[in-house]
Length: 252
Image 1 (cartoon, helix red, strand yellow):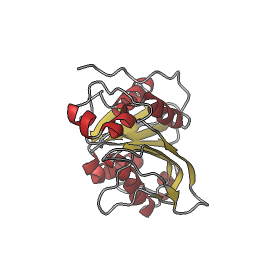
Image 2 (spheres, rainbow, N blue to C red; image 1 turned 180 degrees about the vertical axis):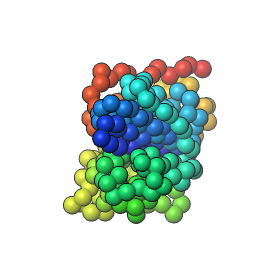
Image 3 (cartoon, rainbow, N blue to C red; image 1 turned 90 degrees about the horizontal axis):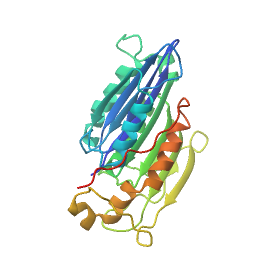
Image 4 (cartoon, helix red, strand yellow; image 1 turned 45 degrees about the horizontal axis):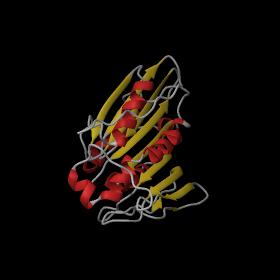
């Protein structure tokens, strides 16, 4: 199944850090010094970190290019959520004291996005951070497929804003509605449905079995309109840069 991507931005005195998880369980970190305006990124998922066929990987690569100064990137498959979790705690521990202080938690600026199983892991990771009183600015789910034992429909109260993109067709189809566990703390931006039966998307470079057995699920993953919205939501919470475009997919 697909990936998870995560962004964490932590602002300290004269430096800032941004972390973002990505597709199929990938993750990357961005750090900069001299100004509290640049974040680090972690991207997570179930594909290779350099597989630019997948839109979430493309987005992470684009962000890394735009925030090139002091950027560190690492990829986690969605089954490695706990590894990503530990990475976040290390990144938030700015003074390397071995624990994350109340102030460090308060200064955390985290965004998490994921596709398919990675979207389910996005919510699960946010829920783990809630137990540690670590806030999350934004979660983004794209055609979220819930893993056994997980609930990808209820967004924990430590998440400030959440959005859900889904399609309803095929053997694999996403969670149609997410809701806030606590509406006083979490705003659901929306549940946005896409119809690929009426508006098919050509997914060049994707394996034949994805295109045959999970066609609509793959179409939302390669739909540039969806990922432009994901990118806009993320960039709206990052320092201003001249935005690039999602990288072109390689053709088979």
